[in-house]
Length: 182
Image 1 (tube, rainbow, N blue to C red):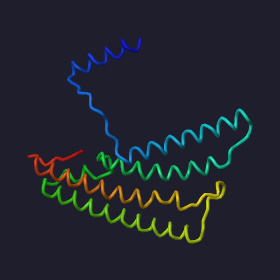
Image 2 (cartoon, helix red, strand yellow; image 1 turned 30 degrees about the vertical axis):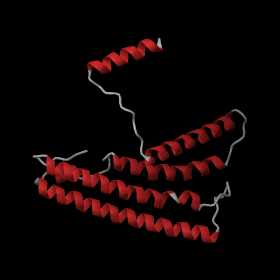
Image 3 (cartoon, rainbow, N blue to C red; image 1 turned 90 degrees about the horizontal axis):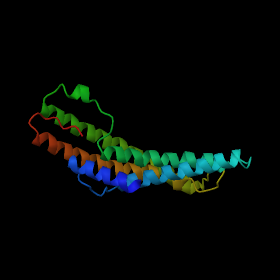
Image 4 (cartoon, rainbow, N blue to C red; image 1 turned 180 degrees about the vertical axis):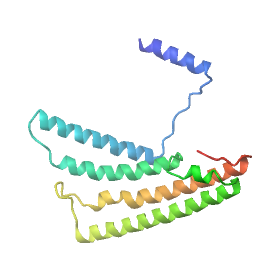
């Protein structure tokens, strides 16, 4: 059954001229997927232990929350890399292409400033957590380990924002109508 399905899919892809390309994943996508997989496994183990063994694993909720922070930071970076971030496209499209380009760079500068502040504050929190020996309540792990995702994610986001802005600027300059979405 499976070889027949694969053959049919390949013939459909050939008819549509779809090229098979090996998907390359960014570090943000890999880390985000890893943390999401760990969250899924941890929660599944807790549900199993709670309903089958009648024993709840208390640390799983805590671990899930901290891993969710990591997942959010790296997921945001991944979204930026794909140009899937929130914007005011409806308003910006009312302006001519050169003004849109100014808005694109203004938005990028503001975003870099915000994520620089976020990263800097994250570093301050990490230093404080390390200095005071803060630990997670249930697992007794150093809290700064999970907080590392904030400055690392912020740095990766800034890099992706610059890459996307430079690419979109090139798109603005190469297109006649100045529409450089995605």
